Length: 280
Image (cartoon, rainbow, N blue to C red; front, side, top):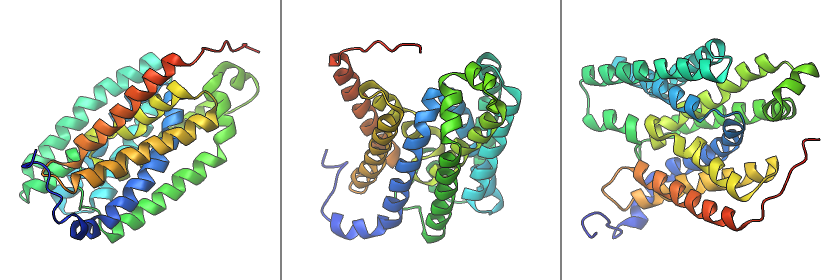
């Protein structure tokens, strides 16, 4: 254990990750909030598909010397629009995602293989880098986070209605298809800005696991959303703080903390009395 963890200069190192801690807290809030709707709309697989093309976009930007975050955003949005446009029903959507995932991953690996720069930059796109977030990237993250939060608040009520009972929402005149397309862009933006912190391939620990844990111990949309945000923030910030004193990338810490939270919530959920909900 002594070879893995070294907290002797922890105080000095802490100042190096201020931007990463800010980024982690923002990602926790945004990812946790988006995660509630990801689970409510049965879209965990879609998030994984988006992350693969986000990785490809980031790797392509790295290869040509462009901004990695911009490339990641482009890849994520393209994936979201394709999934939203081509996959209306769950079965169709999963088929589209199953096609996009290996394509995006293969394309990203090709770009990284052609990249002549430092190996750490390539590996960081997959697993995250604890000190990789600089000032301009934090500014981009803040801007994207605000866009996602404002957009989600604007469509919250109709989106929640459509997520709970799509058929009734259609009968009431809710633009379900338009909402679905609009919502798909929001997790795409969240995934894209998570690349530099936790890595594109492990973003499910932010957008799926915290919300899944919250659903085990809470039932109302507000309670689940707040708990999901808390769990995601603890996972990312805790992972950064642990990775700072270790020779291992950040992603194992984030995913482990997230999984432990889920395991505890699952055990706690078994002890809660189950309530019967009336369909009315």
